[in-house]
Length: 201
Image (cartoon, rainbow, N blue to C red):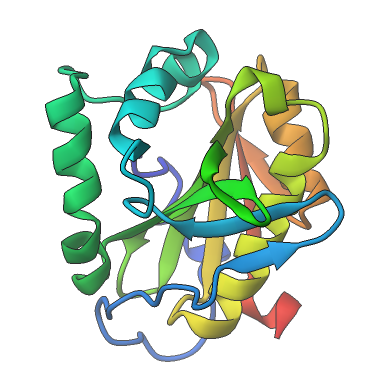
């Protein structure tokens, strides 16, 4: 994910002393679950078909338009990305979880995750996507809400950011329904949403 253009704005910074730099990110154990709609969040790499599923996601037009993808999108590249999950998490750089159906971990609905953008302030940016057949059913909101509550409760994170585009109102609606507040809009049409740890703790 790209670093937000406004991330250095002093009026958006939490008060208090600067926290330590990045720390390892935890994994949910057992997987996080939400009954209505039925979803669970688990790490990549649980199912042997995960690399193939990731390649399919990179090929989806909407995922391609609104998220960052590698220039080379082969199964080998996807498998390497999945295999590197542990090092990204251990370094406190990023955490990505599969959105799946409760009780069916091999079914990949989409993804929700975060990437550290300001270690000193404990700011991270969230991102999310779904495969087309799962959209419009409340699953993205349920996943982001569940992930946000858990991340701000167990992670060394003070603020989560979400960036959506005005041309992608469905994604903006997900952030709003998950409790994020609109902090501003950039000249590029990118909307910035925020939620702080104090909101959920």
